[in-house]
Length: 327
Image (tube, rainbow, N blue to C red; front, side, top):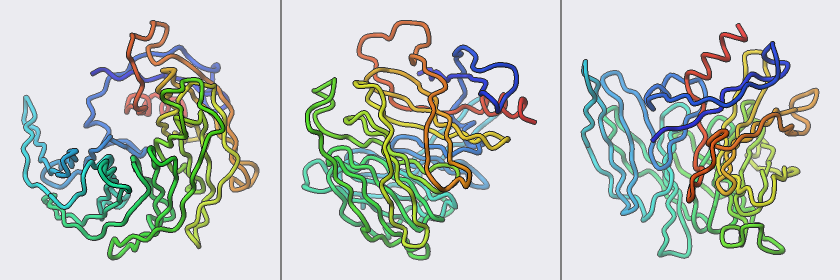
């Protein structure tokens, strides 16, 4: 399926104007391996070894498969090489630590009163071994690491929660640190989807100082500052988005000149919104967002009935474009 990407020229970071019109950039997903940005794939993740590319894919029956992707001169072959059956039911997200040491999975466990988060070691060939598993609030759907992977934030869609965990960097063991639980005074503009808060993602900013969590049900970007010593998160002022937007996922971009942008995709209104971030003079005081661009996910074309934007991803072509302007 084609993915639409907004190609932009950013104010004060790129010369010659404010923003260009949207354009479509289609990149084969494997080129994401070359990106400097964090790459997140829903319930799957990629890691390159010296001889092949390992793809970890989770199934809702609780199996995490390792597949080996090999390129020939004219095609690719994808072969399952191992299965791990230690996952609880309904794994919703897989995430490798930045140093690729451990793989973590959030598990929704629809038939249970709680979800779980699990850590796995992995061999060079992609074989996974369960290290630890801890209970979470119901319906965890996303995970992000912070403070040199000593902490993890988890978004709980069904439970309206954001949780933090400590991680032992040597053993991969986990311990619950905090739980933030949210409510709504009344349903949102789209009541069948916004009957309660629904945090859908957690993402650490490029400075490693903040966690940003799009809340689809509350039409908010929830913001937390990170204490690198205690690993605790502190709730900061949230950013309101237009009622009925349904913010789902975002991605950060830091330009060569030091400007930081946040690309947000909204599921209910099918929009891509770009914010420029301001950290204050010390870059650690208070995070603020300034909207600099907004477009429908289909550009000037009408949104087809039933469409629901799910992911935002910055292509290699966009990075190349930005670097050529900022060199």
